[in-house]
Length: 267
Image 1 (cartoon, rainbow, N blue to C red):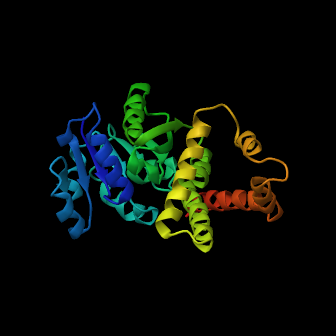
Image 2: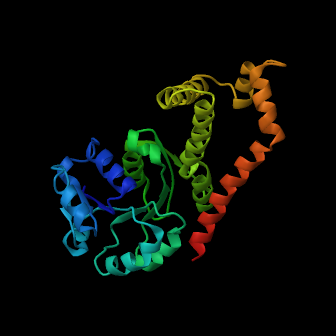
Image 3: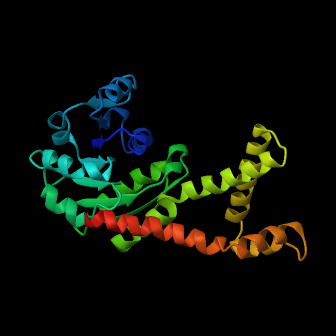
């Protein structure tokens, strides 16, 4: 089996690297294509990729085509791909908002998987939600799922609506965490901690809290109640967040990303 990754940006390159190490693929079975001359030069220094600049040189060879370009590039890309693609190939797309039907109609094929990864895939801690078209067989889907799992975990969802929804939760979610971390680090700096100590205090706190959560069956609310005693420091902080409606603001932010994903799909 040969895999072609179209687009060597952050996520495309992350998946190419991870898939190249999978048991299902031999390193030389990963092809990667990009339009940037500078990117091509850097990719050619990576010995375990077959690097291409032209679709006609690589697309016909691929069994699985992984599309990792920005959504606004899809129309031009699909027009170039359509004469070269064959109906036996499986296309996996991580383009936000681009629906399965759009891809099927634009490419003239039926086997399509739509997926939404997130940035922690770069360190093997990603989560990717995905949904296949009905034409993708069970065996083919097991192969796709195995390749998606090379960057962390994958979740098969029951409708494309959940792909848009996961954009608002896991896809954009790391940025929400970084936003919260940045705020805490700024507070630490204001309290007099050094930049390095602020980073350690905040990053270790997040890391430890996530590990506690993952190693138990307790809900986030239960953990908050464990930490926050009546009249104590943590309760003062949580009360401040409640008074400032932080809970609802975070939900609104997630829905803003969700709504934007849906909007992109209508363009």
